[in-house]
Image (cartoon, rainbow, N blue to C red; front, side, top):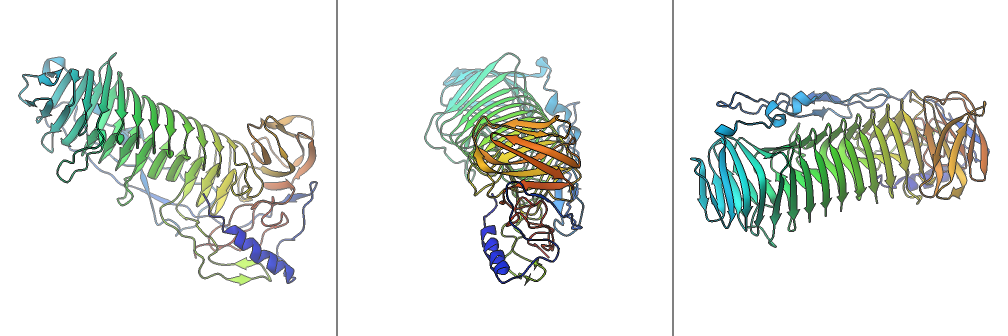
Amino acid sequence: MRKKGAYLISTILIAAMLTGCGAADGTVSNNTNNTVVSAAETDDDILEDDYEEADEEESNDSEDTDTETDEGDSVSEDSDSGSEEGNASSETSQTSDDDEFTDRDVDYSYDESEAIEIILNKDSASSDGAGVTIDGSTVTISQEGIYVISGSLEDGQIIVDADDTAKVQLVLNGVDITCSYSAAIYVRNADKTFITLADGTENTLSDTGSAYTADGDENVDGVIYSKDDITFNGSGYLTIEAGYNHGIVGNDDVKFTGGTYSINATNKGVKANDSIRIKDGTYIINSGDDALHTSNYEEDGKGYIYIVGGSFQLAAGDDGIHAEKELIINDGTIDVSQSVEGLEGATIEINGGDISVNASDDGLNATGTSTSGSMDSVEMDFGDMKFGGGMMMDAVADAELTINGGTIYVNAGGDGLDSNGYLYINDGIVTVDGPTNDGNGALDTGYTAYVNGGSVILVGSSGMAESFSADSEQYSILYNFSNTLSEGTEIELIDESGNVVMSYTLNKTANSVLLSSPDIKEGTYTIKAGSTEDTITVTSISTSGGVAGGFGGGMGTPGGDMGGDMSGGFGGPSGDMGGGFGGPQ
């Protein structure tokens, strides 16, 4: 969420106006309900990230014929962010399924004649495989191979402790394992472990204690815990009950390509250090903290979440999905029914899918990786309203929220779409029921928001309402109502021929709406909502009307000035602010 330091700036501006200073390139005036203001277009360019791919190869399986190597084992990583100028369109990451998943990740079939059977029998187990050691209720696998596990184990665990080059496949063929002191499945060492859910089976893993026993220096803290890469596949069902801590924990990459997973976790549902990659499957996660979480912020090409498909029902005590670096969603059905912040990442890129988010704070939040804003080195010249550097508060140059497609609905108590840097909507259907308080907005950026395509309806409070930049490629209208509209009120935008161009029925109270569509062109429109009926004339890309309030076209691009139209009050519903309050120089 943007820090609301802009109120300080408004005080400075008011003081400047009282001294008789005016804007060189814009006229300051008071809007009434019927006043229409068209945003002044600017020549400011925006920052654009350079992307570079960090490739990491997995070791090849020297024995199996299905040799695997992960080419480009990470999504693109930002570099030199904030050092180059770009345009109003963002670049998308260069990644594909072939880069993120190997053949063996996806193809979970195996030769039963080569598989080793392990039968669990409450407080003991049996197996005649050479790579299996059994000590009471502890089963240790020390060799590469395929192991088919069935039965129940009470207060025991499966441990994988093999060579660094070993690939181990555990086929869960109807298991029920509880453990009171550690992980039910613990991958201590291997090159890569595959957990396959056998067709038509139901499997359950649970922790039943109040604490885990550390393994030397290793703080084991998940029902499934892996120190190395781990992939989940198959078509069966897995239930994880994590009453003490996390559901699934991976110190490296955690991948899912199939199966149905029901995870109830006191802490995080799925926690990975390097990446979470999901190709398909069904995920029902109830977590006390984040439902999906990555944490590696130090290494390039790590700490990301990549979703290309699957069905998700997430109820989280904190973030629905949290990526320390990139969050990329190409497809899938994602329903975050409960969260503090719905989807969060340093950068967020949505290329498709059906996404619904309910958040008590921000709905979609792109945080960036480094704070570029500053209160230092502020240049103030009230004669031409220039604010050359600083005043960006918490703006972050490498933060980007990019929507290239999909259907997205957000119901947020805080900011609806929030980027500490830049926001781009290039396509898709985007709807936001935003905040009812004036301390947040349906749209919130540290620098600037651009709309270049798609159908966009953002409703919320007018106190911090923000419009799209006049450097956008698609027309938009920001309208602030003089009264608060009640839940169930229909807002309509009607063209000169009487056609309804856009309409929306409110799911909660609001007094501001931001509309954008390919069907909006220059011309005269009527906006209707409850007792309000007003005329709006669209003469430029970003147009505003209604009462004063909000922040216009965002906080400006780095090094910009305030030469734009400010007739909406402080920013007001006046479209672009001509560079806003400057930024990193």
